[in-house]
Length: 316
Image 1 (cartoon, helix red, strand yellow):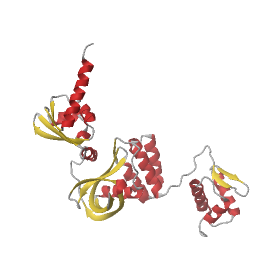
Image 2 (cartoon, helix red, strand yellow):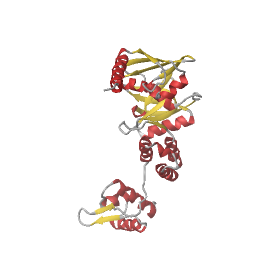
Image 3 (spheres, one colour):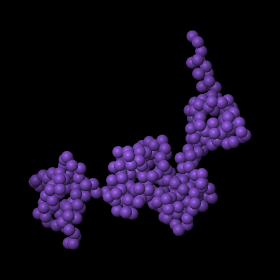
Image 4 (cartoon, helix red, strand yellow):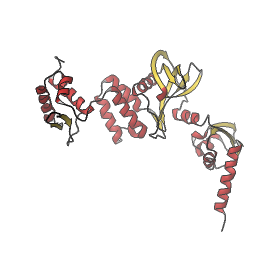
């Protein structure tokens, strides 16, 4: 580090202090390639800049960041910067809004990042979110950044996807979205020849390819997520509603299933569920007559709920 300037060495020392609750002068000297005496000079330089540096003497003495009235510069690696934005986005959709305090803070971080990293973080910031929570597994920040930037550039990607076994897939990444705290890649799989929704935390590698794509004009990432989430459960659902599709769509949440036009005055709701009683409670929002075609479990749950409501409305 012979050609490193004193200011650069001071910033490296600050990064080491931020990464550790306490650092010996010997370790700092080794990291900076200087003597213990020079380390003391760099600590003075940081203190003069208003950064609270605490020191202890003796055999096990050293330095650590103290608590002061001024916030010291925070040095983030690429993975840390991307991961920070992802974590905020999972818990607060307002992160994409520059007028939101959290969104304003993220904007300041982005403006200070190197251009390639800033572009990746800014892209992730615009990810669509819905019904977020904080209990899901977190994906790799750098892989997520690659997928988001490929989606923005409309470039196909080759991903390695981990289920029971790892599988290599080529996919047009229409969007990356967050749903209930979990990150998903939505797009067209050329390997499976169909629409696919992949969990980003199960993507172990991603490579951007030279092939370009155009997403569907009517593509809605949140609608695609909610439609996929309504499928694949234990009990099949089919409900016929005596109302137009637009009216039914305004009464029911999209994650109940797919709406199909029967005719101008009738709509079919198709989906699946593991919780019949939960499902029929949502059906009570319908403001038109409807019939549960399947499944028997759903009809049983509807009868039980109807009996409960009847008793609640009885006199005496």
